[in-house]
Amino acid sequence: MRVAGDPQLESGLLRLFTEELFELQRALAKAGDGARGGSVTFIQRFGSSLNLHVHFHTLALDGVYVPGATAEDPPRFVRAPEPTPEQLRWLCSRVAERAARLVARRPWREPDDARQSQVFKVLGAEPREPQPKRLHARVSGFDLHASAPMEAHERVAIERFCRYALRGPIANGRLSLGPRDQVFYRLKAPRADGRTQ
Image (cartoon, one colour):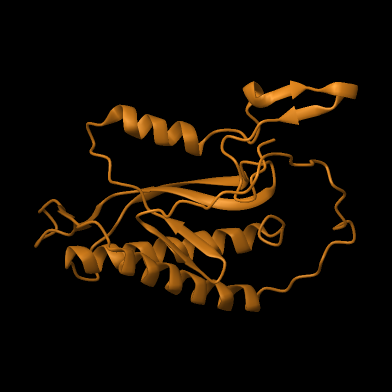
């Protein structure tokens, strides 16, 4: 809720994540400080169960551009190898440390209207064990998921990612009218506690 109510904090968190991501890419590509990464980020404000959950979907280059030897020379792209789970955890740790310092410097007063009434009641089956993800790190409440790289010619995969990152919070196909005019929202996947709608 705090990030959702503080656009400067949101921008600061995105900036520090991007800086740390590019730092890791420079290290993986064995490039110097002059090398530059590139990315585009989509900001999502809701989770899949319509909960307030600010998070970033970042599409980043899988390497860095190294400046040419002279001003006339074009930059050279140096591809970085895929990060290991340990390197991803290091990145998540750096982001968590810097984010904690950034949040501590930002003044915050809980809004008077911060009381929330329950809008959705989530129902469903018995809980099941979450499946481990290959490139995933979790540190101090920060989750970082890295997917396999997409090649430039893989337009369908890139479009699929962009459609996912740009989607709205509500999928109309998952809404249905239940008894007594209750509105049901079917979740894309069962939550860890087994709830499905």
